[in-house]
Length: 297
Image 1 (tube, rainbow, N blue to C red):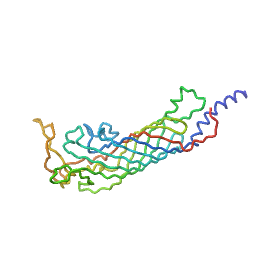
Image 2 (image 1 turned 120 degrees about the horizontal axis):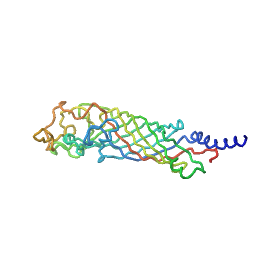
Image 3 (image 1 turned 180 degrees about the vertical axis):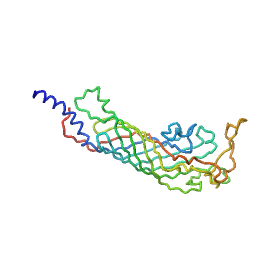
Image 4 (image 1 turned 45 degrees about the vertical axis):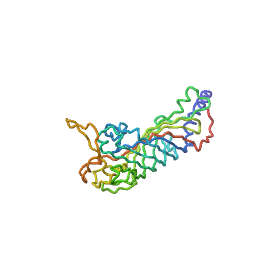
């Protein structure tokens, strides 16, 4: 009987070790680099954005870089929080859209974006620890973990554009702050993020991961397009081109520069939905406190 008890104790030690080890390895530092995609009124694909994950409206031509970093702290064994600071560039151009209507609107924008926030990660494929005598065929599987994330924060943006509506009236290649719809809006806004991610342990201290998250914002002015034309005719607000129609009244091509729209008569953007953006980031993790005294098996 004593022998059976000893055997059960020996078998339980690795399980107890794995169950408690995370408490001694809560903190990691991380940094990542990836791509950003704007999902709003300007640019896009053949269809309007779906306003959920919006993948069908991604304009791959205007993907831009994103850099992020911060710390990761494990609150529970399968729940972690990641405070983060992020810099990204966003850009969109109607000229690259597959929609003739957007091409005729002929707007474009770019902005630098500074973001501060945090996300919570729940691991549905759990992070595991490998003992020295773990069967090698299982090591690669046990090194992989995956999570869903939910978070939020705030960001700063400042959209700009180039005026191209006639060299006689406007300066070409002049960047200028936008706000041309008779609306003055702030340069700070909030966001809610929803995402998926995975991590792969390289060793006891280092790991690499992939994180995809969509940011839903509290502003519709990331691209400065939300409501009606202002009628100012300054080349930043109204740059639309003429649409050429066939005998059935369907648009078939783009013509030259069209007359200016009157103020407030024609929609420049869709105010029904706020703007969003998507990050795809490859992340490196470094475990700061990896000292653990219990024996490995």
